[in-house]
Length: 317
Ligand SMILES: Nc1nc2c(ncn2[C@@H]2O[C@H](COP(=O)(O)OP(=O)(O)OP(=O)(O)O)[C@@H](O)[C@H]2O)c(=O)[nH]1
Ligand SMILES: [Zn+2]
Image (cartoon, rainbow, N blue to C red; front, side, top):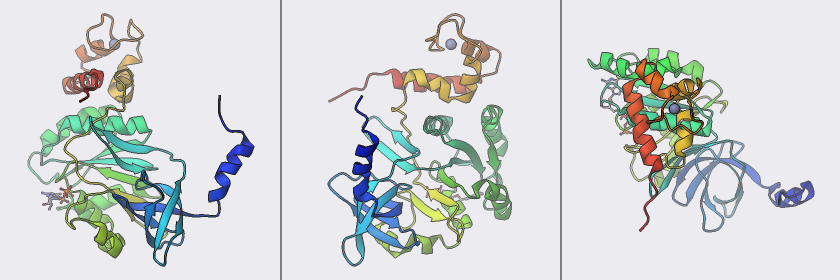
């Protein structure tokens, strides 16, 4: 055991206690926008070569010149939501309270992507809800049907049309956002920017000049961006870039079922083998639930897809 004693811990922490505490509201390569306790925003660079701060991180920082600063240290994180693809890891944000996965009637959403985002959130211990946008479009009944298993497993689904009834969407969403830090994730084209602009009428102003300068393009979100929903800075809204893939390689095959609520509920009844993979073993409670329709086939297919993916040894070279 090499845990430092309390005296050592104090010594390690002491040097940074005099530094200001800031919030990372945007990151772009080695450039970070840090919000000060007073609400000002300063362009900062990390000390040293490694830059592992992400949006939502609380950091210790100090000024280095008249208008720039340096990040000296990261405060411990409550959580970190990220994708782990085969070759790279992509962090969405740290220290979020809740996740909204936004999908739409059109483009037709991938249930696999949706499930991956939900599994990643479950692993990070972040409550997730689903938003279904564009309910004005004719495919709405089919979209609802595809989301029915998620509602049944206890995940709340918001429904709205940001175009036809923006006020209704706001009324449904606002109470949930109050006092929380919410990250919105979703494939491209589902309406994330529309929603952000609806929630934050001064979004462009909040992004600010420094952030604009960091950005490669104005119209697509290329990096997670922190916005405040209220003047008191109590409710945070984090808009993230759309994704087309969502690797969950940081999760082990044995963890998977426990992170899928319908599977966890079925497995709780007890499989014959403690290390059951829920694939072909006799006396499997998940297979029984599948036969009885308590687990739907599309979800079982996703489980197999993810289980295969996570069981494959990583290939190098
Ligand atoms: N029919 C319909 N279209 C909508 C609705 N909400 C947004 N749209 C349209 O959907 C398209 C995509 O919306 P965006 O807000 O740009 O989507 P996004 O998720 O930010 O997309 P990316 O920037 O690619 O990540 C736009 O043309 C919107 O006008 C809706 O409720 N109904
Ligand atoms: Zn089983």
